[in-house]
Image 1 (cartoon, rainbow, N blue to C red):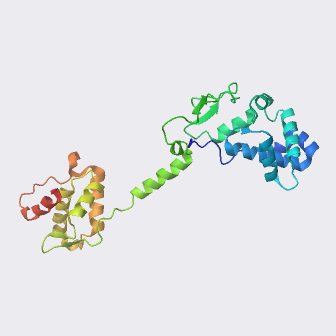
Image 2 (cartoon, rainbow, N blue to C red):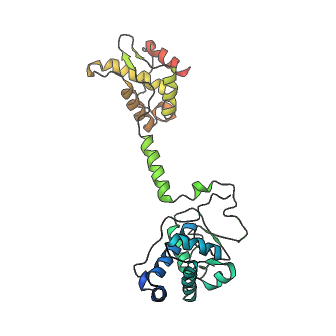
Image 3 (cartoon, rainbow, N blue to C red):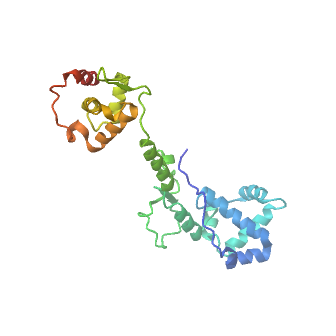
Length: 280
Protein backbone atom coordinates (compact mmCIF):
# COMPACT_ATOMS: atom_id res chain seq x y z
CA UNK A 1 0.00 0.00 0.00
CA UNK A 2 1.32 3.44 -0.94
CA UNK A 3 2.37 5.80 1.82
CA UNK A 4 1.81 8.83 -0.41
CA UNK A 5 -0.35 11.50 1.20
CA UNK A 6 -2.93 12.38 -1.44
CA UNK A 7 -5.20 14.75 0.49
CA UNK A 8 -4.68 18.23 1.89
CA UNK A 9 -5.43 19.65 5.32
CA UNK A 10 -7.07 22.85 4.13
CA UNK A 11 -8.36 24.53 0.98
CA UNK A 12 -9.02 28.18 0.09
CA UNK A 13 -12.67 29.20 0.38
CA UNK A 14 -13.76 32.07 -1.86
CA UNK A 15 -15.77 34.76 -0.05
CA UNK A 16 -17.98 34.97 -3.15
CA UNK A 17 -18.76 31.27 -2.99
CA UNK A 18 -22.43 31.82 -2.16
CA UNK A 19 -22.72 34.43 -4.92
CA UNK A 20 -21.56 32.00 -7.59
CA UNK A 21 -24.48 31.43 -9.93
CA UNK A 22 -23.98 27.67 -9.75
CA UNK A 23 -24.42 27.73 -5.98
CA UNK A 24 -27.30 30.18 -6.22
CA UNK A 25 -29.22 27.65 -8.34
CA UNK A 26 -28.55 24.96 -5.73
CA UNK A 27 -29.70 27.28 -2.96
CA UNK A 28 -32.81 28.27 -4.91
CA UNK A 29 -33.84 24.62 -5.25
CA UNK A 30 -32.61 23.06 -2.03
CA UNK A 31 -32.02 25.97 0.33
CA UNK A 32 -29.26 26.10 2.90
CA UNK A 33 -29.24 22.29 2.99
CA UNK A 34 -28.06 22.24 -0.61
CA UNK A 35 -25.27 24.66 0.25
CA UNK A 36 -24.25 22.55 3.24
CA UNK A 37 -24.13 19.40 1.12
CA UNK A 38 -21.94 21.18 -1.44
CA UNK A 39 -19.46 22.42 1.14
CA UNK A 40 -19.23 19.02 2.82
CA UNK A 41 -18.66 17.43 -0.57
CA UNK A 42 -15.74 19.78 -1.18
CA UNK A 43 -14.25 18.92 2.20
CA UNK A 44 -14.53 15.21 1.41
CA UNK A 45 -12.95 15.67 -2.00
CA UNK A 46 -9.96 17.66 -0.71
CA UNK A 47 -9.48 15.26 2.18
CA UNK A 48 -8.79 12.52 -0.36
CA UNK A 49 -7.11 14.71 -2.98
CA UNK A 50 -8.53 16.38 -6.06
CA UNK A 51 -11.33 13.97 -6.98
CA UNK A 52 -13.87 11.69 -5.32
CA UNK A 53 -15.12 8.34 -6.56
CA UNK A 54 -18.90 8.55 -6.54
CA UNK A 55 -21.72 6.04 -6.84
CA UNK A 56 -24.87 4.91 -5.06
CA UNK A 57 -22.98 3.41 -2.13
CA UNK A 58 -20.88 6.52 -1.59
CA UNK A 59 -23.99 8.66 -1.85
CA UNK A 60 -25.80 6.65 0.83
CA UNK A 61 -22.92 6.71 3.29
CA UNK A 62 -22.29 10.40 2.68
CA UNK A 63 -25.93 11.33 3.30
CA UNK A 64 -25.79 9.71 6.74
CA UNK A 65 -22.81 11.88 7.67
CA UNK A 66 -24.21 15.19 6.47
CA UNK A 67 -26.89 15.43 9.12
CA UNK A 68 -30.22 14.16 10.33
CA UNK A 69 -33.07 13.92 7.85
CA UNK A 70 -30.67 14.18 4.88
CA UNK A 71 -31.61 11.47 2.43
CA UNK A 72 -29.45 9.89 -0.24
CA UNK A 73 -32.02 11.06 -2.79
CA UNK A 74 -31.56 14.68 -1.71
CA UNK A 75 -27.78 14.39 -1.98
CA UNK A 76 -28.15 12.85 -5.44
CA UNK A 77 -30.41 15.69 -6.55
CA UNK A 78 -27.94 18.30 -5.35
CA UNK A 79 -25.09 16.60 -7.20
CA UNK A 80 -27.18 16.34 -10.36
CA UNK A 81 -27.77 20.09 -10.14
CA UNK A 82 -24.06 20.76 -9.60
CA UNK A 83 -23.21 18.58 -12.60
CA UNK A 84 -25.82 20.33 -14.69
CA UNK A 85 -24.25 23.71 -13.82
CA UNK A 86 -20.72 22.43 -14.53
CA UNK A 87 -19.68 22.79 -10.90
CA UNK A 88 -18.35 19.26 -11.38
CA UNK A 89 -16.97 18.00 -14.69
CA UNK A 90 -19.73 16.05 -16.45
CA UNK A 91 -17.46 14.16 -18.83
CA UNK A 92 -15.26 12.69 -16.09
CA UNK A 93 -18.31 11.86 -13.99
CA UNK A 94 -19.95 9.94 -16.81
CA UNK A 95 -16.77 8.18 -17.89
CA UNK A 96 -15.05 7.47 -14.55
CA UNK A 97 -17.74 8.11 -11.91
CA UNK A 98 -15.68 10.78 -10.16
CA UNK A 99 -16.46 14.26 -8.87
CA UNK A 100 -13.83 16.86 -9.78
CA UNK A 101 -13.42 20.08 -11.72
CA UNK A 102 -10.82 22.45 -13.08
CA UNK A 103 -11.31 24.76 -10.10
CA UNK A 104 -10.96 21.94 -7.59
CA UNK A 105 -7.73 20.76 -9.19
CA UNK A 106 -6.26 24.27 -9.32
CA UNK A 107 -7.03 24.89 -5.65
CA UNK A 108 -5.68 21.48 -4.72
CA UNK A 109 -2.44 22.18 -6.56
CA UNK A 110 -2.12 25.58 -4.93
CA UNK A 111 -2.51 24.05 -1.46
CA UNK A 112 -0.09 21.21 -2.24
CA UNK A 113 2.52 23.17 -4.21
CA UNK A 114 5.13 22.99 -1.44
CA UNK A 115 5.24 19.21 -1.62
CA UNK A 116 8.13 17.59 -3.39
CA UNK A 117 5.80 15.50 -5.56
CA UNK A 118 2.18 16.01 -6.58
CA UNK A 119 0.61 13.22 -8.63
CA UNK A 120 -2.31 13.42 -11.06
CA UNK A 121 -3.87 10.69 -13.13
CA UNK A 122 -3.67 11.80 -16.74
CA UNK A 123 -7.21 10.54 -17.37
CA UNK A 124 -8.52 12.90 -14.67
CA UNK A 125 -6.18 15.85 -15.27
CA UNK A 126 -7.95 19.04 -16.38
CA UNK A 127 -5.15 21.63 -16.16
CA UNK A 128 -3.34 21.04 -19.45
CA UNK A 129 -4.61 24.31 -20.88
CA UNK A 130 -4.35 26.43 -17.72
CA UNK A 131 -0.73 27.60 -17.73
CA UNK A 132 0.44 25.10 -15.13
CA UNK A 133 4.19 24.53 -15.24
CA UNK A 134 4.24 20.86 -14.24
CA UNK A 135 8.02 20.77 -13.87
CA UNK A 136 8.15 23.85 -11.69
CA UNK A 137 5.21 22.70 -9.58
CA UNK A 138 6.67 19.18 -9.23
CA UNK A 139 3.56 17.76 -10.87
CA UNK A 140 3.79 14.21 -12.18
CA UNK A 141 1.14 12.94 -14.60
CA UNK A 142 0.80 9.16 -14.48
CA UNK A 143 -1.51 6.57 -16.00
CA UNK A 144 -4.58 5.46 -14.10
CA UNK A 145 -3.26 1.92 -13.70
CA UNK A 146 -0.03 3.07 -12.01
CA UNK A 147 0.30 3.11 -8.24
CA UNK A 148 0.90 6.48 -6.56
CA UNK A 149 3.79 6.45 -6.24
CA UNK A 150 5.36 3.23 -7.56
CA UNK A 151 8.83 3.98 -6.18
CA UNK A 152 10.97 2.43 -3.46
CA UNK A 153 10.98 5.60 -1.38
CA UNK A 154 9.53 6.65 1.92
CA UNK A 155 7.01 9.15 0.65
CA UNK A 156 5.82 9.94 4.15
CA UNK A 157 9.04 11.92 4.36
CA UNK A 158 9.27 13.15 0.77
CA UNK A 159 5.77 14.60 0.68
CA UNK A 160 5.86 16.49 3.96
CA UNK A 161 5.18 20.17 3.39
CA UNK A 162 8.25 22.37 3.27
CA UNK A 163 6.85 24.32 6.17
CA UNK A 164 6.98 21.19 8.31
CA UNK A 165 10.47 20.41 7.04
CA UNK A 166 11.53 23.93 8.02
CA UNK A 167 10.23 23.42 11.55
CA UNK A 168 12.20 20.17 11.82
CA UNK A 169 15.39 21.81 10.53
CA UNK A 170 15.04 24.73 12.94
CA UNK A 171 14.58 22.30 15.79
CA UNK A 172 17.72 20.41 14.76
CA UNK A 173 19.75 23.62 14.59
CA UNK A 174 18.49 24.64 18.00
CA UNK A 175 19.38 21.26 19.45
CA UNK A 176 22.87 21.44 17.92
CA UNK A 177 23.52 24.65 19.83
CA UNK A 178 22.83 23.02 23.17
CA UNK A 179 25.99 22.36 25.12
CA UNK A 180 27.17 18.79 24.81
CA UNK A 181 27.55 16.88 28.07
CA UNK A 182 30.36 14.48 28.91
CA UNK A 183 30.61 14.48 32.69
CA UNK A 184 29.21 16.64 35.49
CA UNK A 185 32.27 16.26 37.76
CA UNK A 186 35.30 17.80 36.06
CA UNK A 187 37.69 20.18 37.85
CA UNK A 188 41.26 21.32 37.43
CA UNK A 189 43.85 20.38 40.05
CA UNK A 190 46.53 23.08 40.11
CA UNK A 191 48.97 21.13 42.28
CA UNK A 192 48.96 18.17 39.89
CA UNK A 193 48.47 20.30 36.76
CA UNK A 194 45.69 18.16 35.35
CA UNK A 195 41.93 17.87 34.97
CA UNK A 196 40.21 15.63 37.51
CA UNK A 197 37.34 13.58 36.06
CA UNK A 198 38.43 13.90 32.43
CA UNK A 199 38.62 10.18 31.73
CA UNK A 200 38.96 8.26 28.46
CA UNK A 201 35.20 8.18 27.83
CA UNK A 202 35.02 11.95 28.23
CA UNK A 203 37.93 12.44 25.84
CA UNK A 204 36.29 10.19 23.24
CA UNK A 205 33.07 12.15 23.41
CA UNK A 206 34.90 15.46 23.18
CA UNK A 207 36.68 14.29 20.02
CA UNK A 208 33.34 13.41 18.44
CA UNK A 209 31.74 16.68 19.53
CA UNK A 210 34.60 18.85 18.26
CA UNK A 211 36.10 17.18 15.18
CA UNK A 212 37.45 20.47 13.81
CA UNK A 213 40.25 20.76 16.36
CA UNK A 214 42.94 18.65 18.01
CA UNK A 215 41.36 18.00 21.41
CA UNK A 216 44.61 16.76 22.93
CA UNK A 217 46.62 19.86 22.02
CA UNK A 218 43.79 22.17 23.01
CA UNK A 219 43.54 20.60 26.47
CA UNK A 220 47.30 21.01 26.88
CA UNK A 221 46.86 24.69 26.02
CA UNK A 222 44.03 24.91 28.55
CA UNK A 223 46.37 23.57 31.24
CA UNK A 224 49.03 26.14 30.37
CA UNK A 225 46.49 28.93 30.38
CA UNK A 226 44.97 27.90 33.72
CA UNK A 227 48.41 27.79 35.35
CA UNK A 228 49.55 31.08 33.79
CA UNK A 229 46.27 32.78 34.71
CA UNK A 230 45.61 31.28 38.10
CA UNK A 231 44.69 34.70 39.51
CA UNK A 232 41.70 34.87 37.14
CA UNK A 233 40.14 32.14 39.25
CA UNK A 234 39.18 29.86 36.40
CA UNK A 235 38.18 26.49 37.85
CA UNK A 236 38.57 24.53 34.64
CA UNK A 237 35.10 23.02 34.83
CA UNK A 238 33.06 21.48 32.05
CA UNK A 239 31.75 24.79 30.73
CA UNK A 240 35.31 26.12 30.46
CA UNK A 241 36.36 23.09 28.39
CA UNK A 242 33.31 23.31 26.10
CA UNK A 243 33.67 27.04 25.52
CA UNK A 244 37.35 26.66 24.67
CA UNK A 245 36.86 23.71 22.32
CA UNK A 246 33.83 25.21 20.63
CA UNK A 247 35.78 28.37 19.84
CA UNK A 248 38.72 26.42 18.44
CA UNK A 249 36.44 24.00 16.59
CA UNK A 250 34.67 26.88 14.82
CA UNK A 251 37.94 28.36 13.57
CA UNK A 252 39.68 25.07 12.75
CA UNK A 253 41.80 24.60 15.87
CA UNK A 254 44.95 22.53 15.31
CA UNK A 255 43.35 19.88 13.15
CA UNK A 256 44.93 20.83 9.84
CA UNK A 257 43.60 24.40 9.72
CA UNK A 258 45.37 27.06 11.80
CA UNK A 259 46.28 27.81 15.37
CA UNK A 260 46.86 30.94 17.38
CA UNK A 261 49.34 29.13 19.58
CA UNK A 262 52.40 27.80 17.80
CA UNK A 263 54.52 27.37 20.91
CA UNK A 264 56.51 24.14 21.14
CA UNK A 265 55.76 21.68 23.90
CA UNK A 266 59.41 21.73 25.00
CA UNK A 267 59.55 22.69 28.65
CA UNK A 268 56.07 21.38 29.23
CA UNK A 269 56.83 17.66 29.39
CA UNK A 270 54.96 17.36 32.66
CA UNK A 271 51.77 17.97 30.66
CA UNK A 272 52.65 15.46 27.94
CA UNK A 273 50.87 12.63 29.77
CA UNK A 274 47.52 14.23 29.05
CA UNK A 275 48.05 14.16 25.29
CA UNK A 276 49.14 10.54 25.54
CA UNK A 277 45.93 9.66 27.41
CA UNK A 278 43.89 11.46 24.78
CA UNK A 279 45.60 9.77 21.86
CA UNK A 280 45.16 6.26 23.35
